[in-house]
Image (cartoon, rainbow, N blue to C red; front, side, top):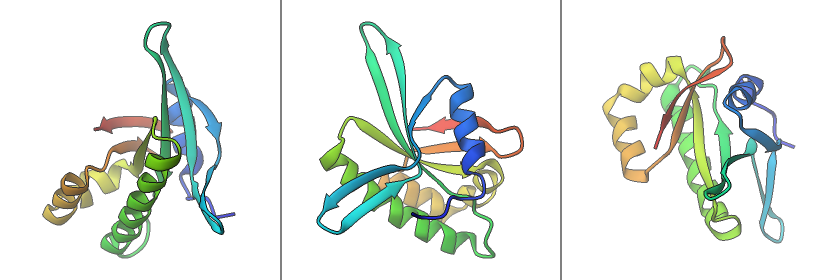
Length: 139
């Protein structure tokens, strides 16, 4: 089992405050023999009788290391691999990368991360680790 990021529970609490039901902690998917991935959270929300339900998977990153760029490289690599697995196994589930507000307001405003997020169509959840709230959804 992979270690949970420092702010794992802050994101989980934030999702629950927005009426998401956390269904998997972690969301384990087997892509092939001996090739499993663990995405930090799986959640669902009922949209209404006619609209059905919405399913998401959330990979949580803390961005607390000395190099935000190295953290981003790791996060983006995981995100792309996890999205590929989800597209084949649970295509109805949308993958988000959860990043703390401080990292989003500084690092993610730089040109390289902005271009990479746009190029790879990374969906982002910005969270406040102190208030344990979701601050922003970026599709």
